Length: 340
Image: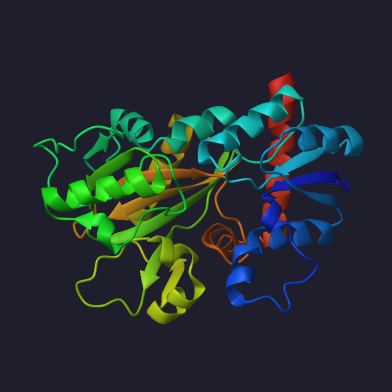
């Protein structure tokens, strides 16, 4: 592909420096995605212009008017402090008839709501944990069908916001306390779902209509205490020192061939059901009986070079530079289909 002008949208605090040298491990970790994407796209010949945006859409419009980019590489995970507002930025790009990478706004809306996405997937006879939603301002009443243990999460937040060891509860009292925590500290409705004891699996999918599914990846905690549940808490996901201390890592999942094939088939179905495009990571739990359950979809997931999406692609023979190029090409192709 010929060199492109690319406008890269990201949070202002994550606009990458020229080098990560001299940064603390935690600071470098937090900026790794933006740094990896910008550096790699430039290394393969593209003219990349990072733009930090948070509260105003005008800088995006102005940058598009001035740069006339061939495509916008969307690295925003929230806007104006709201996780659900990132879909509005993508809608704005569509109104401007500007190609962009990643998921379309419809897929983002459908998949961001954990309850809605589970209902749609369950309707198509794909296993999901039993769950209930607990809206803010209402008394916590557990439906009798919902059995302990449960894990309590924010209904809309992602990146494990609000998830800790205390999120797994085994009594109505603990359930009420954790729901209250989500309401007051995270500021969203809560969802409580059956906690599936077992393995946490991640399936990375790339594509619009024709889909590529990369090898299944797995969360591991080599220094986890015996009997401690394996959950992707905020510390597990984002705290470098905690990860080192507890042996947290992700790696290729060793699965029987038939189970791996079923996961691939289900991942493709879910991707289509939720109207996802671009690229996404689908999260599952696998119990001791070999049954898997869909947890949630993550459109525009973490794509730093060393994270699970890129690592999974690399295991399938797709280099990091090629992965980013494919994401760009999918964005350009999607725009052409929309305008045709």
